[in-house]
Amino acid sequence: MPACSAKESADVVVIGAGIQGLSAAWHLAKFGIRDVALVEKSTVGSGSSRWSASMLMKQMWGEWQQRFSAYTFERYAAFAEDTGFDAGFVRTGTLTLVTPDVAEQEQHFVDLRRKYGVETQVLTPDEVVRWLPLLSPDEMTFGVYGPDDGVLDTPNILRGWRHSAQAMGVTIHEGRRATGLEIESGRIAAVHTTAGPIATRCAVNAAGADADEVGAWAGLRIPLLNRVRNIFLVERPPQLKSRIYVMDAATHWYFRSDNGEVLVGMGAREHATVQDRPDMDYWPEMRAMCLRKAPALAQARIVGGWAGIRPLTPDDRPVLGPVAEVEGFINNCGWGGVGIMNAPVGGQLVAEQIHDGRTSTFDTGPFLLSRFN
Ligand SMILES: Cc1cc2nc3c(=O)[nH]c(=O)nc-3n(C[C@H](O)[C@H](O)[C@H](O)COP(=O)(O)OP(=O)(O)OC[C@H]3O[C@@H](n4cnc5c(N)ncnc54)[C@H](O)[C@@H]3O)c2cc1C
Image 1 (cartoon, rainbow, N blue to C red):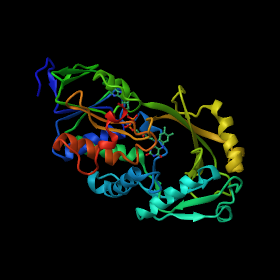
Image 2: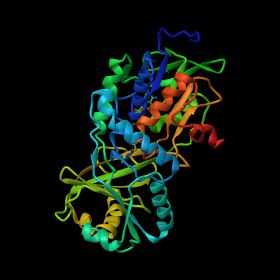
Image 3: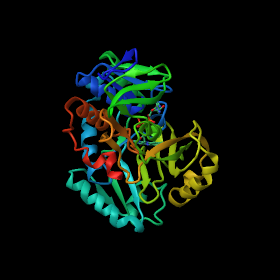
Image 4: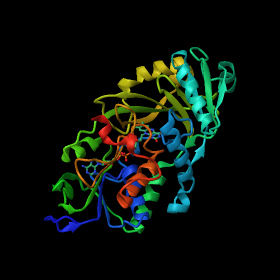
């Protein structure tokens, strides 16, 4: 451990206790690195992880996502065995509505999924509407049905990793904000926090929407595009019987039935507020989409909702792995709209990197921050 003035120390400090930070801490402990301090400025899971739609999907949109998905399905299936808590996966299926402008691209994704052995069915607009009469066939070229996708119980996953990590020796500090890094001779020496510095050899940046600020302490620029997505909860129209997740491929407008209500989501707004209710200024845009795709949802009464940040990046890939500039600084951020489903990947790769000095489950090459240089 590098010399520094801190009285407190930890082998690894993880900054941010969202799903990715918790996963990193849990995986480190599993690898035998148990002297881990997880510092969280607020409470566990209070960032983006609180606001997600909790989808776990096999119908993904490219090679790396398809490979991650195969891995995460296996890992979440073993979650109860790993942690004693159930990941709560419920198979709902997904239906993607494809318009002419994205038909070629979506057909490519269908071919790719089949190459990866994922069950994917292409439906005509008539078949779609016969099955889900709530939907409008206008604008639709075809639909893509994935029977194996579904929804996770994110709060229970957070509980599982939290309790299991603590049982293995990880210390979680809520209400303790990281405020800077101490770097000596190009190596991490300490993480400064509102409750004093913690001497360490390794800092993991799992700060979600604030990952750019944490990166800046190491002289790095992480090009996050924090975008706010609104979810409205509306009363379930009687003709909607299924829990299937329906998404428009071109606009990413989506809905799914949940506990008698329908969750309707869309949007990537800059500078919007994150809150535990949806932004009503956004409803006209959302309602216009409902009118085009599923008119009954446009008439339904709004009963709640929320608005949360998706920490996106310019190429829609997460930022993972070490950096050449500072030894001991490891990124696990920029997860955008897929950070819940891919939390087993982020944690596993962080633990491999710190334990072995390299990753073996996946190559982090395409995800390193240096790709933006
Ligand atoms: C509306 C919506 C729907 C979504 N739907 C899905 C979905 O269906 N499936 C899916 O996989 N993903 C989905 N996502 C994306 C998913 O929520 C995120 O990718 C994921 O939560 C990111 O997790 P994280 O741990 O990186 O970030 P966060 O959960 O934001 O955690 C980061 C933590 O770091 C803490 N922090 C920040 N700075 C500091 C500091 N200086 N010191 C200490 N702590 C700090 C924050 O307080 C926060 O708790 C959705 C997101 C939204 C908004």
